[in-house]
Length: 365
Image 1: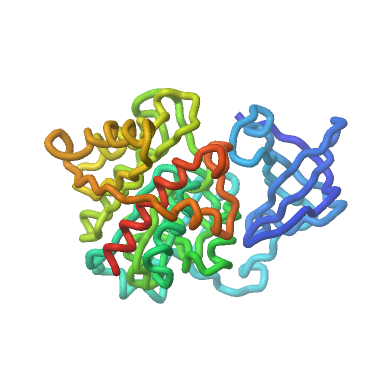
Image 2: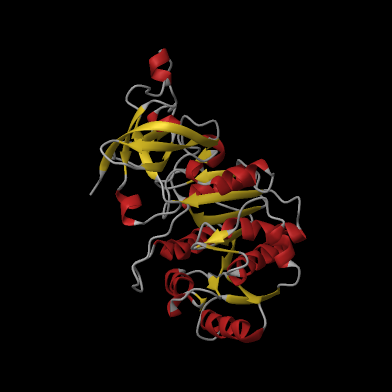
């Protein structure tokens, strides 16, 4: 299940919020690997330190980014509040019952200063909630939103279908630094956001009532699990996020996963992931944004999306013109990449996500 390796840090490559990228020389192997460490969990690695690595996903060629993961820095353990004889608030445990389970202060728990605000909270007051399958949609959604409402406050609600640590995402760090998002709420088993919450429901309420968001974007963290089956993919949770937004009196906006370049027929045009999550899992109606892409691809997307609307589906289909969105995407402060493809390789993927941001912005403008 877990492949362990020992190694020595030979280079600290770069840092971003909560994360250090390293080059580690692996013991008993004539090789070095790229590795990521989360100092709050494992300690602060420095050149020359011995580290323990887990390499299962790397050796199988899986995962986002091609990294080994630092499981421990035995000679440099992190300092905790308990070590300083201070009481550390919070009893919300995430990545539960794993060796690296993290105890955090949940925004919704009793020790939180926001507990009273959230205790009986039950209403998003019509806040648009853009739901997307892949993490790569996040910057594109915000790029589209900013073409209409550049000063809107945006919160990212990160679910636990992909990476669990929000620190893993350089996209989140760079969007926050650029002022494109106002914060990240990590929900479920995900952790490391600006705010922690138990469920998507309290995460959305925290986005609205604690962060003051005008719009929330819900998507899994980096990475995506799929099995080539109808139901075996992590993005099925997008349908549940639609339900959560609706039950809280939000305005769910369903962003379609679209591709013009995926070699797999089930993902060409509108992905079967979107058709299943929104068509079968989402029991509440949402605004399904259909990008007007033009040409043969555009017709394919419109035809595939049609099953989600009346008379066969429960959703409202909203067509959005895509003029100007490519330019907006090229101005994004982060690198755009989805399933290993950039903007030039699969523009439709990003334009479709951006169009959902346009629609969400129009709901608040």
